Length: 235
Image (cartoon, rainbow, N blue to C red):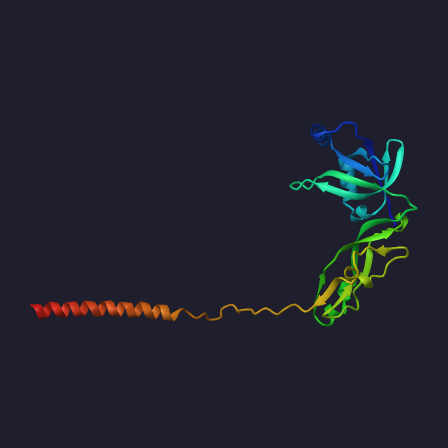
């Protein structure tokens, strides 16, 4: 972990939908802290301060110094809820951490040297990023900003798997199964060639339909001639 973030909060006194709406109008985001005791602690965080911090992607996977009045605790984000229409943060959950206890946290995967990837530069392939983040287990002080994956030697029709990530000391990837640990995270493939119709190329018309129309017209004209002939003979 190379950076740490700071937030200030106040203890929440009132509850219920009406109080929640009032807090949000006052630019305060309701939040919960888990892990302090058997009971969670309800707090309020300044909206502008929170929005400013959340602009940094590293904020979501780093330890945060949270001040609640005179009390200071170290936390990480557990869950962030947003308004589905405005994307505003409406509620946030924190998890208190102990520097001596390992925790599970979600961190991004960063792919490097994509511009000199063998499969792209030499073979003309393209990269497909399959997984962009994963859950790790480590002590809070060892949380990395990201897991780095070098794709320089990735050739066409090959993949790099989760098990191939070089992990920092003290960091483990949390996998539900052995199969999941071998999941491909990025691959290099040759894009399929698409058939392209050149502009100005002649297009065949539906001649049979035109022929049928002409045949119908000729048949109608022939019928008229027969009627005329019958009329003359009758006279």
